[in-house]
Amino acid sequence: MNSLKARESGKDRKIIHVAGTNGKGSVCAYIQAILMAEGKDRVLYIPHLVSINERIRVDNVPVDDEAFLGVFCQVMEAVEGMKKDGIAHPSYFEFLYGMAMKAFAAADVEYIVLETGLGGRLDATNSAGHPCLTVITSISLDHTDILGDTIEKIAAEKAGIIKEGVPLIFDGNSRAASNILRKTAEEKNAPCREISKNAYEILEVGRKSIAFAGRMRMIKMLHGRCRCVVSIRL
Image (cartoon, rainbow, N blue to C red; front, top):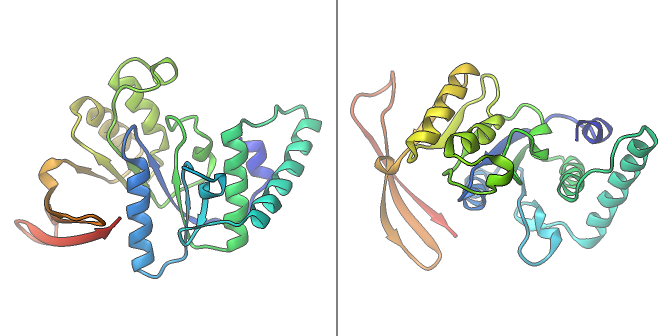
């Protein structure tokens, strides 16, 4: 993957990297909604439901067929160069990830929201570089033949996206997973914020929206609790 990245390199973007067992897609969508509300240039790389173009979105709009074919040809050219150097053909996911990064570079966006495919430590998206934020959602037993047969082993693989000095936000509802994530963040000098069920309160669930109140302790700024209400359109 690093060989493909080297051939497809471009200027650095602000990357928000999301891993976890459940909720990755929803979290990516929420982050994109927040960025859109702030008027930021943003893109999204997530699995598709209907059309493969859905994996590569700019301003929540999948790239069209012409753009998709264009980046395919560019990455295919890079792959041919890899093969001449004796480097194996990238996997399906790795190839699509390379296409996405080429499309994002062409769009000249400021923010990229990346969802991991499997695990984190060895995932293709983990070659993206130094993110500005990492997020790890809830962790449970899944793909145990690849990631490990315990929560702790799977959490260690997900924790592979944590980078030196990069803030981490993670789901803290599993004590076993949280212990691994906190330890890794400490080793990487990564500021971390744990989100548990005590951190929010669902106020209203509509057909196309969720309203919730978030409560957090403002360290070194305020004493007590700070309460805010956020409404997210689905």
